[in-house]
Image 1 (cartoon, rainbow, N blue to C red):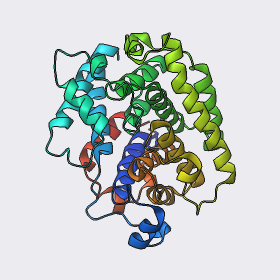
Image 2: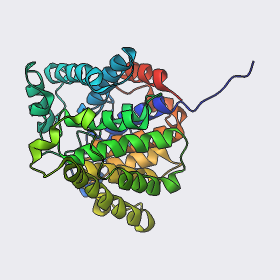
Image 3: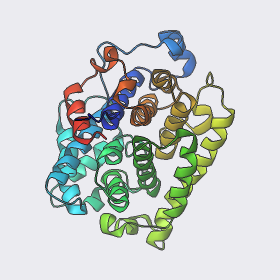
Image 4: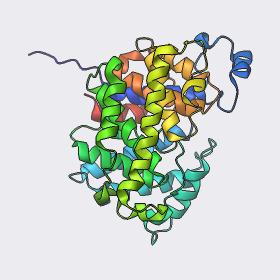
Amino acid sequence: MNTVVTKRAATGALTGLALGDALGFPTEFNDVPSILTTFGPWREMGLPKPAIVTDDTQMTLALGRGLRTAMDRGRLAPKRLERPVREEFVDWYRSPENNRAPGNTCLKACHLLSEEDRSWQDASQIGSKGCGANMRVAPLGLAPGLSEEQRAGAAQLQSALTHGHPTALAASDLTAHAVRLLAEGAEPTGLIGLLRSYAYENRTRYHAVWLGDLWTRAGDPSPEHFIARGWDDCLEILERLRRAVRTVSPETDPCLATGEGWIAEEALATGLLCFLLFVDEPLTALRRAACTSGDSDSIACLTGAFAGAHLGADAWPDAWADRIEYRDELLALGALWDL
């Protein structure tokens, strides 16, 4: 009997996300000269001891648990996803382990989500396009058996529970799509083109079944106008990314080319830039992402998700992977979704 060996893309992506998060945790809020002074040459950065993660990994796991619950109950649909994910986000909000400098948007939205009689649309922070929406979306790029419509709608819904700005929705959708493409074997050299095509195709597609009347909170004249604003931001940053991949020196702070990553589309682009600069050197990619002047942990966790989806679980040495916080839960979700 032949044994089929897979790259275990989900385990690779989730492990890489957490490793990037832990590596970037101590460097966030620092400029590059300060990071180099404290940690030495960026290509030699070691994983902190202990390898503690931030809310980025915690919320990724919360989404992953909620998604697993929803899929265990049947075909993925809006209410079937919203209920368990909402519960997981509120549990995270109330947890004593929620002490890793979480973003204000997530805290405010989750407080409102904890009020059971409040619709999630009324809890959503419609003006926020912070990276907290797409730094956690990787599970939706990894879970098998979803249609493109389910994956896109679910990626946008999980964003909208906290971050309701159309750019947060579009960037979350695009991030999940990038993870899925890489997990399924897409060549990194063609990735930006595939993402641009996806953004153009979906530019005016408002997923009303998943989002309901969310768009009415933003003052746009139509749902199509609302969501197009988000996709236009993503298309603009993808063009910046396309130029950066051709021109940026690996020794230069990636944030100078594609943004500091505090907002969703910049986190996506700068995370992708670090991955694409070092496609076959995943640890170097993580180190570059962690040695940045912006939201280093979120940039690095996205870089790790992309690299792990592309290369699989073997991308990460045991000496690092075995030390990461929440290792058992990361492995359990990865094993459930591995390709």
